[in-house]
Length: 202
Image (cartoon, rainbow, N blue to C red; front, side, top):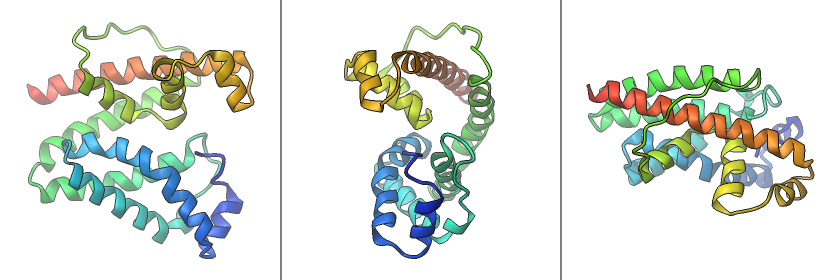
């Protein structure tokens, strides 16, 4: 998703280019939906509202978007906007205190996790044995898109490393490295979610 949203795209979108605006909506809807759904307590209608408001706000504040600051620049910028809309929604739904507190702790911990991934391998963490479908989906929804897409290609769609490399125009070695970091991100995210949910429940 990130490569398409460079400086040239930003200039076209700011000029009102309908194709550029549609490009953002088409690319962002799925990842934003996944990111927001668990943060609004699984409320699908609320999630739709949050995603819509996030995209509208993104278009209003597009001048603040700075391309190419990181691999997931557009995703990080959009999820930052989404967090504000999620807080508003949860407060209106009278569940903001517990959900906001949980996700503020999560965001701080996951930010450190993602920053450290590119600096070296994480230490192994022992995961809970009760890995429910909801927990796995919640974990996947919080991963940066390039990690989530790598895991889905390999483990959900059953594609080989060679096939993934060919589709990306990359090398098998680069894909293996991406998968290693994606697995580390999943493990760390799952562990952080489990720990924070236990704290929240206590």
